[in-house]
Image (cartoon, rainbow over all chains, first blue to last red; front, top):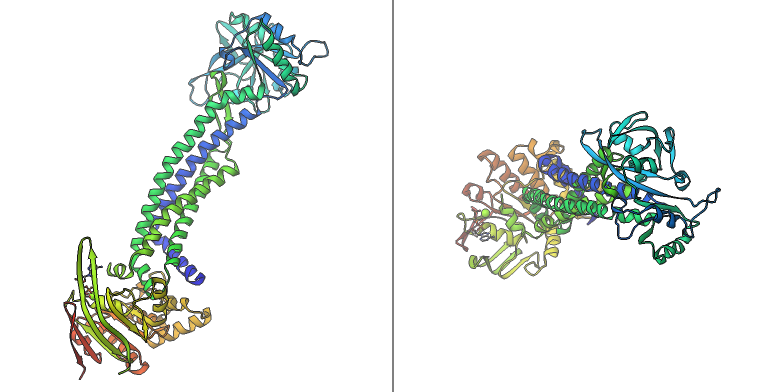
Length: 392
Length: 229
Ligand SMILES: Nc1ncnc2c1ncn2[C@@H]1O[C@H](COP(=O)(O)OP(=O)(O)OP(=O)(O)O)[C@@H](O)[C@H]1O
Ligand SMILES: [Mg+2]
């Protein structure tokens, strides 16, 4: 049985180069499907990784009650003070709570890639900012000074947008700003932002309110006490969330969209490729109808015939899967992409073609190949030999 | 007479859609061990159909087919495949060689169904090629062989597992007169010197003369048997 099967399989595979055109339909079709699926999923993976990095469990963010994002939240200076006086917040050496009231606004910057205008988050933040975010490092230039129109730019924003290198001058709302430094936050979505002093930003943009308050908790467990205090205070209508939860909620829509795109587009393409593979294998089988019938006349069983066709389809699609995954990896792994993130501004993230994605892509290829091979194989095995021999 | 093939009351009906056509209408025949039978008849008379029943490629609608004392009309598909491997060597009009395999590999195919070792298979395949006079062509692919040579390879393939019966459907139908005669001489030699029982379908009265018996089929009925002069 094994001898029969391996002989028939070897014979079929040796015939593949003769049907190069038809066989490459399977390989190319499946490579395309896998490349698209893996790339889009790589986008989702990269986005998730960026978002998962955002936020620390010992920080909490407070927005106006009912606000989904910082951009449509607004609170007065007294609310900020009340929140910062709540229990559960870590105190600095000077005895003041470690927390900032931030004001965010959207500015337009041209993209390096095509020059088109994009929304970028400009964040004004308070004095305890560097204590609040110890992960923030200045990688070039220096920190902004309060009371002057200075900004620092995130590394990701620097890569994506024109005119934000250290020393550049920007004009927003008739006010001139200077970029004085580049910062890194370890890859979270603050790296897509411009950051400056909150009072200066407020006065330049003629605003008085705050979009959010972020505080450093005494410990992650202090969150409940902090939150309870806020919700029981009748003068406040605010929502408090742990930072990671907040960012996860912010990105849910995009993650869902990317996953939907991957599975929907990938699914449709996969169906197409399955029919392509079916078609190719049906013609391969009918082109070899006489050979198959002759083998069976000689006494070869139906099983070796089925297996040989199946194996051929599987190997061709495996090849397609590997090519597709390799293409996705070569062309997209590590590519930076930006998309609308929280605050309706750009979040820059890297496409990540992970080994798991490569494996899923190849598994998908094998599933397509199996389906494409199975039915033609069964048909070949079930066709009466006498009928098949007459096809000469 | 020592019959190696016995058919009795064999009919064969084909159903296509709602139509049923009876192609063989009650065939009784015996073929003796060591005989060389030519099965003649006009096109569409049912020669191939009858040959397929004898070779176990198809099964009768009614009646019985026995070869070497074994009823084959009752065997299941997979049993029949094993039975064919042991008892039947097929020769087809268009040779039906595997285009990707060398002559020797083609001849070896039936031996893959036996328990012979690779070395033994190679040896037997070469011996069979020597019998048909093609020992020097063992490494050639079918497209490097003439029609007559290809048919010799096919005959070697049919012989190699030492079957009970050689079954040939118009083995010279695709060959010119001289080449056809060479093939027919080869079959005659296999019959006379190696004792092979052969059933051969042919249109060609000259080809039929090489056989020891001729059977005539007309519209699904056997209409006479002639013994060669
Ligand atoms: N699978 C089938 N379904 C329906 N009819 C069939 C089938 N196979 C054969 N026939 C019919 O059976 C009849 C006999 O066919 P068969 O091939 O046995 O004739 P033949 O004597 O070998 O003819 P030829 O000399 O042309 O090869 C023909 O009328 C043919 O159309
Ligand atoms: Mg015929």
